Structures are given as C-alpha cells and as structure tokens.
Image (cartoon, rainbow, N blue to C red):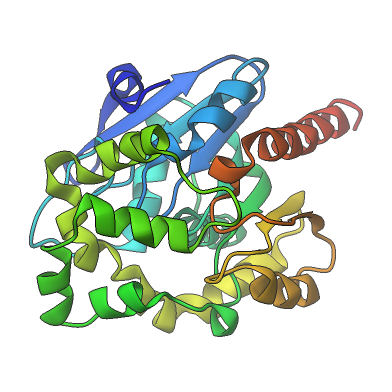
Length: 294
C-alpha cells in the first residue's frame, strides 16, 4: 500500500488537549496496538499491519507531531502526552485490553504505559508486549550524531529546518542492516515524515531524550517488574540500540522470549516484516490460548 492510501484510510481522534490525531483500525480478532518511533510514523508498520489484520484487529496511531496527526510548532512535546493519547484512543474505541507492540520512541511511551498499569492508573489493560529495537537500557543506548545535534538548543532548530529528503534517507539507511530502503519505500516513509513540514520539528520531537535522562530508571524498572508475556524482536545490526542493548536487556529481563535478527538494523518491522509479524502473531495467539484455558 502506498503512503497516500494509508493516510486516506486513517480516521481522526481529537485528544484531551484538542489535537487531531490520525489512527487506523483494520481486521478482526485479538487486538494489537502498534506504536511507532522517531522520526517516522505509523506507516513503517504497513506490511506488518496488513499481515496481522488477516486474523487480528490491528490499530496504529500517529503520535502528535508525526505522520498525519497535528504538528503544532513551538510546542513542548512529551512522552506523558503521547501516553495520554494512547489512553484517549482506546477509550474512544471502547477497547478494554490490547496486546502492545512498541518500537523506538513508541517503546518509551509503552514503558510509561506499563508503569501506569503497575500503579493501577491505566484505564485499559495491556495483555502482552512485544518490543522492537529501542534503548530500553538507557546507559547502553547510542544516539546518532544527528540525534545529538538536534537535541542541542538553538543549533537543533537550525539543523532541523534544513533537513532534506536526501539527508533523512541517509539517516535512515545509516541505522538499517543489509537491506536498505528502495526509492519507493523511502518516498512512502518520507510522505508522512514531511507532511505539514513535520521533519522541521525534529528538534522538538527528540526532546524525549531529555525526558529519558530524568525518567529512565522508572521506565526500566516498570519493564523489569512486568510479569506478563514479553518478547523482544531485535535487529542485531542496529548501531543505536542493537546487539549491545539487547545483551544488557537480557540480563534485566530474564523471562523475556528473544528473537534475534542477523543482518537487520533499527527497523525490524520494515527490514524483516514477515518475521516480525509471525513473532507477534505467535505471542498474541499463545496468550489468547492461555487465557481461554485458565
């Protein structure tokens, strides 16, 4: 599916802060919610979502500032607001429970949601979790040079305002494994990244790294305390949060099921969508089977 078609299929939610957020809902069966990362948008799950929708209800959301959602300028974006948006969406859809798939920034939002559930403050239930590449062990996370520059005051805004399609493509290719985006794949990805000049807000969106510095211990503790189904599907060739993060995560999450992907980088859902979809399906179906027989 082309990105334009993906956007056309999206519906709109008005959040508690009166922002218009794009979401997409397809299929029927156990409900799976896919949370995307920085600097992309929900379309990077297109192949995985299409596969899973054959026998699952699949929900995607563009966080505020991403994809087809509102992209306010001069705004303080936050992990807490993104987590609130997930709550708003599931309330809007009357969804009491979801299986959570989370990648990159989406996994940080997911950790915030897990923390809320452990504190009995989440209005829906997370039934299980699959994590794709993310710096879930903060001390092992290695941001790219561009990410570090974007996070600098003044300089970050200057650089963000001059990001081009070519520069964005080089950045994405730099964190991928052996399979890079072809021209059509990048054009589809760039469509949502650049809608409403969203790529020029990168310095604001990446403020989540500052939040990490404050909250990473709480978020890591939440994932460690999670006692439900947990799977890590990991591209080992990711220079940002690849094998070096996974090795640390294994020590902290000894009960997690692990799928290691050789030759795959930071975007397993784009680089190896069939394997990722099958890994998610296996976990969701096992969890549904266990619930049926308890």
